[in-house]
Length: 119
Image (cartoon, rainbow, N blue to C red; front, side, top):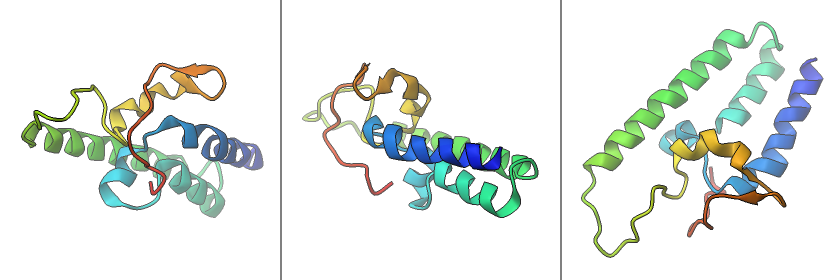
């Protein structure tokens, strides 16, 4: 089962994540591993069943990072020259919409104007 989950994570990282155009909030805020990479490392180190509390804690940290990024974004003055869109490059709020952006099946998001591959 552990191997199967790791294969799924690798599939996600190689075939879905590059086409999303955004990244997890934890990686965007802390400039570290994405949640998928962190979960993969946790599973490799601790095993599948015993890693659940650590994975849950990581997702809670990501949720807190999203809240912090959202709060920071609300405090920024709006640039009148910038096109007003509901997303920004690496918008962590869009991470819940992975199913809407699958290669060759279409994406309801417009092309993003920047490269988030560092995340």
